[in-house]
Length: 281
Image 1 (cartoon, rainbow, N blue to C red):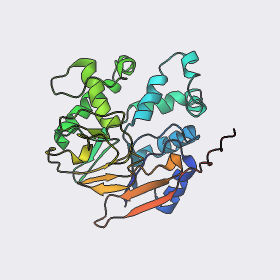
Image 2 (image 1 turned 30 degrees about the vertical axis):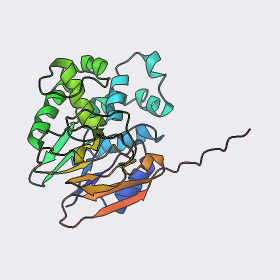
Image 3 (image 1 turned 45 degrees about the horizontal axis):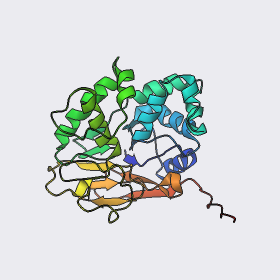
Image 4 (image 1 turned 60 degrees about the horizontal axis):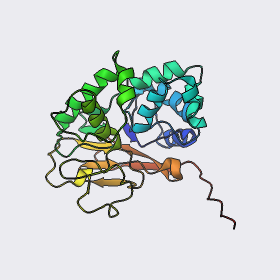
């Protein structure tokens, strides 16, 4: 048996198939952890979503920002759905869309296996969150996503404010929790997310830190695997294994074996991206 974590797929179906072949994935005994953002931009989101759904008995997937966006768009009027990119439209107007979206909405924001010693989130954790607090906050939002109030949550999910604080309540609290789990890259020592900062470390404004390097952050008793930050690339440090290596941008799709004492990483080429067309004057 092997347990593999896989970085952001973002609709890159062919690279996903190639990676599963390269790791010799055996659904009879192996397990897969997907770090979220299954869909968008890769051109094959429908096929990718169907593939992961077909593997659901042997896989767990945490929700990423693109997954949540797809779910929110899926609750809008048809004329609004037809304004999104063709890749997502193929999901929204597929005959099995309800099956796929209902399944996706049941997926967690956080997955932890304490026996294995790993936790998976899409983006990151707030500086003061222990793994136990993170699990508690994830369950709060997951309960609403899976309950009767999910449409209300999707309507109010978007926005950069308020920043996370333990005393937040209602939809403000839900939005802040979602932002940490699915949009975090840089933040201040007090946990204020710098949403506009998306490039590699060293490019950020003074006073901002990668979420895993914030001075004085809470101790964490599990190793963390995550995605979301393609410009960071493959990063291993501070108990964090970031494995979004930009498959959708022409980078690589990465798998990390979680049940091995040795560090084992497998990569395949991502989606072919044509070079930009030179401007003519």
